[in-house]
Image (cartoon, rainbow, N blue to C red; front, top):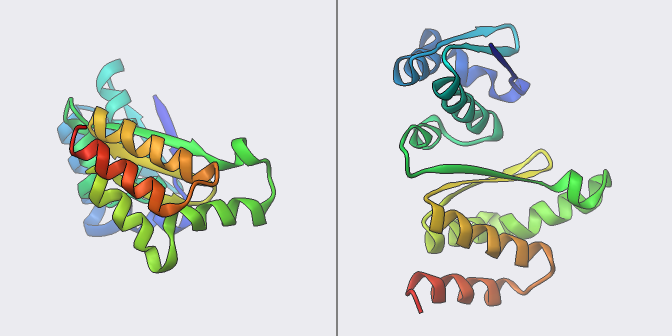
Amino acid sequence: MKLIAVPQERLAIFRKNDGALLKDIGKESGVSAKLDGETVALEGEGGTEWIAEQVVTAVCLGFEPKIAKKLFGDDFFLEVIELGRLYGRSKRKIERYEGRVIGTDGRMRKKLEELSGAFLAVGDEHVAIIGRFEELKNLREAITKILEGSEHNTVLRLLQYKRKGL
């Protein structure tokens, strides 16, 4: 059995429509998925339980359920960059790095998603990516460069270059 703590601000998604999301996750993965207070309990066989855990985790990280469910496909993966582990516990520093990835009015985040083909969720001391292997790899590289201080335009050109396959 796997237990996954759900952040307070994401509980409504799991409660919506009488737990329709958890029913979908259970149906798709073949596991029992139940919301118990602020925790999702998953019970099933090893491999399918792990996939259901990935989907629940993605929703908890801020992805829309429709995007998180892509993880049921064999070609989509989830990766989480934990900013707190990279940059210590300084709230100001972490917020600055989150802001660099998001950009003004979310424009950088949208451009990163558009050019890479992957999906991005930023917040609560993490940057999470869902995408196919190459998309995920390219977006992770771009985010790493942003976090290292590269100019946004330089990173966007890198993604354009990789997108064209040059």
